Image (cartoon, rainbow, N blue to C red; front, top):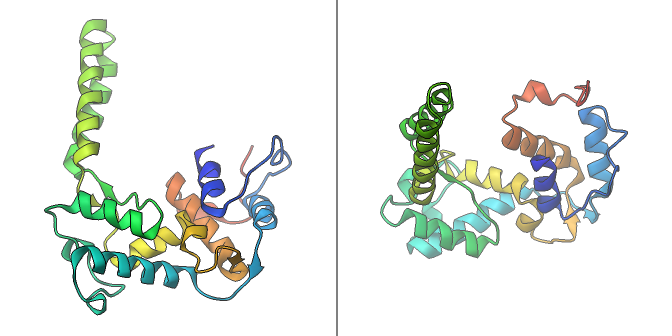
Length: 210
């Protein structure tokens, strides 16, 4: 499961074969993950640490006063559209974690979805036409991803929060520490982010398997 791979990467753990075979609920899954994450317990806020690291990287790359960057600063305003992909790549290098924050315009996503679905429908009449459509979809998707400049989140604070649960270990000031009090919430945020779930779908009594 892709979400579990993200947990392994973000928290520096590894699931063994059949280790999760007994897990039936979200609460049980969180218990297993919590028990596997090493490190002494500290009470410092990971989101705050992610913000300061992100702010320093942005200020350095954009050559601006760090004090100008606040949690509610709009990313579209802070990071100019011109050269945005290069700036984000440099920020990723400085924070030591992928931001995965740039996406396509909404109209482009709708267009690509329509092209993909239309191509599948075309198999009813012509395999050649359908394959041509899927080929075009692949080319356009690749181009769109390589040129995407739209932010997936709105503010610098939103991005720091996203970093704090997607790259938890990398954002900690001390890699060997963990904030147990915030941990379950960060794990839920990661699952919500990766699986597109609503908060009420992540209750700890929710069954993960029928």
